[in-house]
Image (cartoon, rainbow, N blue to C red; front, side, top):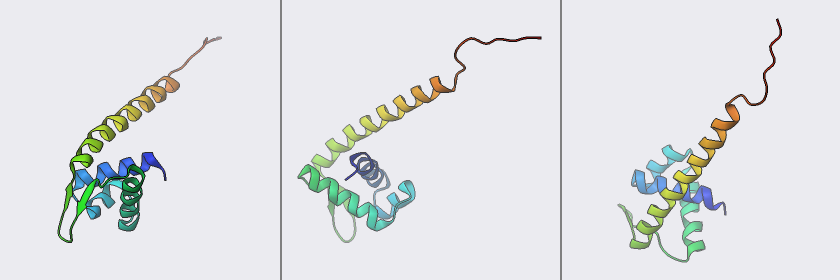
Length: 98
C-alpha cells in the first residue's frame, strides 16, 4: 500500500463528500478510491468513514486522521515547492565575454 497516495485519496473523499466526487479530484476510478480507503482502514485498524447506501460520514478517528493528513500533505507540498524553487534559480559563477 502506498500510504501517501492513500492519504491523498482519503482527504479527497472527505473533501468531496463521496467516492464519486473524489474520482474527479484524484483521477482514480471509483474502485481504486474504494480500495485505497479500505487498505488504509485495514492498515490503521480502524474505520475512518462510515458508509451506507445513501451517504458517507466521517468517524471521530477519521476526523483526527483527516486533520493530520492535511498537515502532512501540506508539509510535503511546501518542501517540494522549496526544493523546486531553489533548483530553478541560477547558481554558480557567471562569466560573460564580449
